[in-house]
Length: 282
Image 1: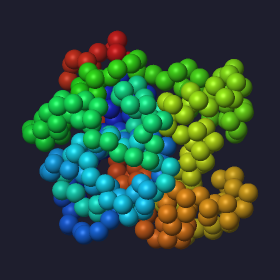
Image 2: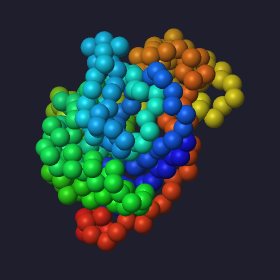
Image 3: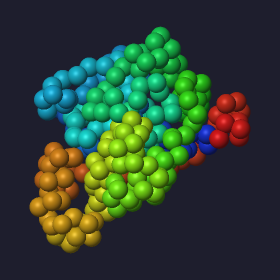
């Protein structure tokens, strides 16, 4: 399998974690589990007209979107096809998609939408342009230019949300107080821009830190891991594994996916001059 992950151009680095491209590998039937995560993503099938995911009202419910689709924040695991020939993905930071799309993340939680539902025919044209890109640098430049050109609002979150994401407190009350807002107003604003309530966001980000911590380990003392990551006891940690990964800690550890934990070195790409190279847009 070929896998490339690159940073976005500078104006998008506060909103996007990475662009990823992969192709090849041995075709495998069946599904993989994608664990819950606190950021949205954009998927582009460069080799076909549709994408499939499994979840929603029922764990086995089959959902089909166009080959370019926007995934909301997922607070529970979903199933995805185990093999795709050529794929492109944008992994947004928590709250990062809010500035780039008209659909509020709070309204997109636990679902996917075809991008043409938001962008019209421009989305399908973008999918064609990406599929026909002559090389990877051109592929990433086309994608970055399209995101910047369609951004409906300034490339930043509300200051209170931005502060909470940069320095999350141990409690929602503390985050609201730091923002000098009432709890109700802070929760409403945070949920609208991030797609999760602050309480659920704190749970999910703790779970992400735990997964990154255990990934390189050869063996795990689960009781020690639970205490190190602030769980009251091991049973509370197991509850989060079942809620966010759909399996026990042992089952997750045995089947963990290296692409989920940034083990492929980040490569740099030289973005062309234009919107992506304009320091004023940063």
